[in-house]
Image (cartoon, rainbow, N blue to C red; front, side):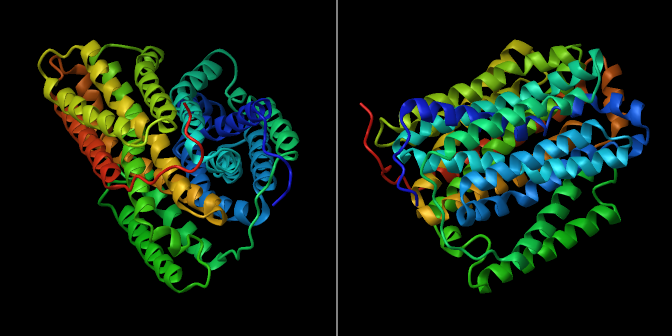
Length: 478
């Protein structure tokens, strides 16, 4: 490890700004393309291949996340995050210049290979520079970046596609990526860098890539391109299960597995991953399906429904900010997220109960904002608890593993919520709802969505309550 002094507050702010830009690149491109898809299809043709521009990025970004964590522990954080940003920018330029749908899908794979580790790497670098007791408030800033991008992405994509050209969705990454590259490189070069001798289990990596990639593909296609009980989806799920079984076998026998057993054996790590996976999955699933409700029940257009999601975003950011700042001041730092998740579960049940009664969009949004506040309060506590529990040599691997499982859970919950909201992916039901005067089918569907949300929040609460509350390293703030 370098003997360079730790960063002063000004240097740390500059690093945080650069890391925030890097995170924004990855998080934004998971959502910004969605609202521009019809315009892209009209321009490039081959509309039957349109889902690939989302699926290709999601698969690539998910499968490389654990590898970024391992490489960061071996080769150093700065080098690996620079490779990620450069790869992402190259992929973005290729996307903007793509002459066909097939070329665009291939370029999105390159983007995903670059963007897949940026979020976990940013969290790992902050963990290197800031003590666990101080880390919560910085993790809350990252939570704000991620949640903001999940809401702002679709709005920006629609504006670019409607008023200018869809390629701007990708060209915008060029100045953002170059700025992140310059700031991160110049500042991290002057700061301490942690590197640890590790072997990379490439066979385990191949099995993990196969298992997670096949699973994400099945979740993306199920109920959309193919029925859930169709042969292609069953085949993908079966192949994924086999790859996961082989990965578990390899993990138990490898001298140094991709995700070390010493990390997985820690109950605090398992509980934190499960809590954050159910919580974040519930939020992402909610943000995907709620525009359906707003547009059909509230008679809103796409941009108005996007604005209506802002309170949900604000609730999550506020929860993460409050909880993150309290971590450094409270001995029992789980208290705030436990209370928030408990209130969020009750609010989700309340949202389910009001379906078909008063049907007030204002009240519904208030209840869902309470739910997202609780989810936001959990996120920094779960992340910092994992980083506080593992050795410094495993910091990158543990952080990336948590992000990896969060992404898989988000994909699964989105598929579940979408199936509940639109009857298992039957587009005709959605058209029927538009002409249904009392919206009975819609209210029934979303009652199930909110019940499922309540279950996700309750499980997040359960695993957070089970999680050990270890004292945080570092001095307590006054």
